[in-house]
Length: 435
Image (cartoon, rainbow, N blue to C red; front, side, top):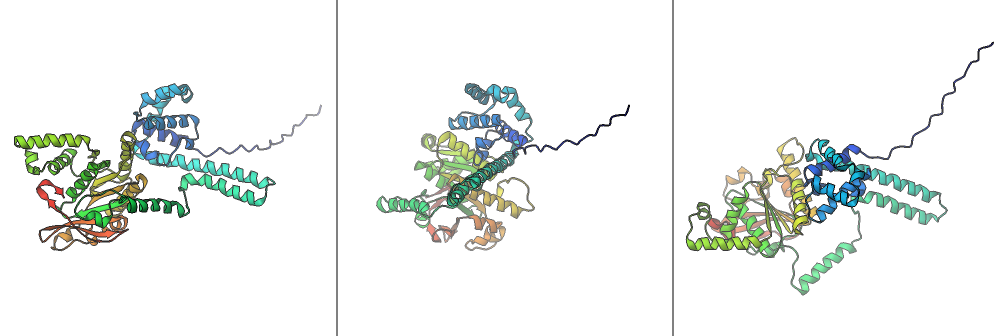
């Protein structure tokens, strides 16, 4: 009997459908970072939305984060689990055990933005794929080609808008806003921005607007006093102010503000040896400060990204923010490594510019002058700024407090959108106060 031979025919390869772009690890790390450090949410919420998450349970969790922050409730394992339970989705996401596992899998919450960017990039890729499929369908249709191309452009634009910003707008949009401001200034005498209420500086600056205002000077020239005077004056007018003091703890900042408010010399406030009348002034100042919308943070080496995150948290908890004060630029920290100090300062300077634009507030920041400027008795100039290249480039306004012939002068050495010049002011050193 002949042996039957069997010929094996190779199977036809079946191409698997490509997996939609996503990173489970990045999504878990982004959510875990917020559970570890709730402030990370404000860093991520600038560019990340629930729809950017590919895994549905991660979308549910991010929606809960947003809802808790909107209602000004704390974010932690318990509150998130409780909110998911109310939605009937706790079991669907994997229960409290899954939330706990997200915390344990995060390498470090310091890299939250990097994780979020990975999530956003994959989301943009998915949107582009969806747009490409829609464009292909349009191309196969029998619709007029003008309609097809118009719809195709709209689909592509919708896909990239989130990743690349709002894009170009017709000039009538900003013109309308500018026209309204001009009308208010003309009819009601309302000049947009925040008045400093110091000397005739507001005449020169036309108030503080969105941008970076660098206040630079030598030691003892009143940099900190100027910034605190502006902060207090703004708060007295109802503007909400965030003060980040990297050089001095909050207690010392409060002592200076108390001297400013009461007229009691700083050294006497520091000693605590006050008369009965002076104690009454301090008590009155305490009542005033209780009503002032000034919020202080004395975290050393804070970075621009951390400032933005904490300001966003402040906005969530207390409402709109009007002014950010930082003391001072050269001792701020930065994210990541750099080759040298000049690069660090450049990154910090650009970071503060970004904070101003994103929060839509003026940022008033102190800066040091280099030591060469102390060797001569002359007026300071822009080249005296330590690591001056990036600071000078990023600043919208540079102000030098300078005592000249026993007269305090505020030298506006740079004014991107207006005139340069000198503004007269009165600086009472023992009260650390500009009037």
